[in-house]
Image 1 (cartoon, rainbow, N blue to C red):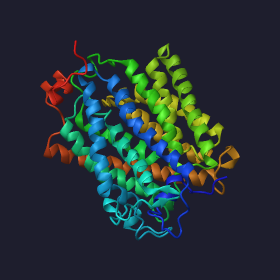
Image 2: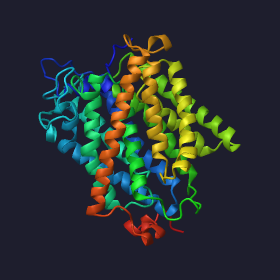
Image 3: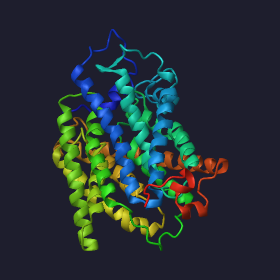
Image 4: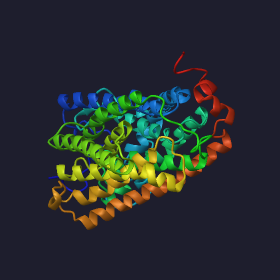
Length: 436
């Protein structure tokens, strides 16, 4: 059983650089796994997410998704080294149970990776490996947002937005969730093992804001805009599924008895998500679709991410099924009724799935329902989860709105109508995905 609030990353992040006298010796098994997990999470972004998103847009915009994914990886990777890692892990001024400025964001004592050397260890793993693993999280989170403004945001505006958003939104929220004793959501008792709030709700809400501010694509919803290559999109979704094991299991910082539960729950969440989405689509649309099954897997994976180390297999089944059902309804019914154009349904999958998963973590974590967290009740934990969800939603919504408005004032957000008509591949990069 897991003691309350002992999240995987939280145990590691708040410690920063372990002192040599206190650090456990190098664990070669866990280190080898973390190198593998790091590669898997990077694999989720490039090529996984790039293929998934690229296959879903029109052919004239496919390369723009690849350039955004690669561009984001480059910019965020550099910023992570300059100050991002420090903003997330620096625990200076934090005290268990007390709220201070550093409960919201870390300091800069680790800027430029100060203090790291070849002997630096974090929980028995080389700190360089740990820094790189965390960098892949920082890269894929803003990259997810790109699906919402696909086919209409300028590349320069996208990169500027992502750089500022990473600094003002991702890094503070990640610190609040995983910063350890004294961090805001740690003080509240929020359970988030691998990123339901910091990654999925964060990206989903920012995506919704971007869709609202940019407005609809030219011709949407009256002009048909089907995916240009579902095979590529399905392959990308499969890569995301495989990479997710690195995402979730790697969030423990190594290998332990919990790793097996995280693995089976991750797999069960994805499978149940497929079933939930498939059955709902079959009932409402009359037939299941290939894209629907892939989307169901991703919905289940998003939902189980915060819960994977805290719930039993029954909880993973329930979370996956419910995410499959409600994420389908969000991208069909909710999106149509509210009238926003989230191109690739980032909010419907990651925002809604992340909210459902985060809240249900508070339900299924209790031992009475097969959960693995001792000493909590459904009522108290559900309240903590709700506070975490509400704060993340509100802060991310307001901050993303302000950042997008500021970027619009500086560079303009949206590509010119003629560029949008031509396609961003040619208009912005002078390249074609396919030469006939």
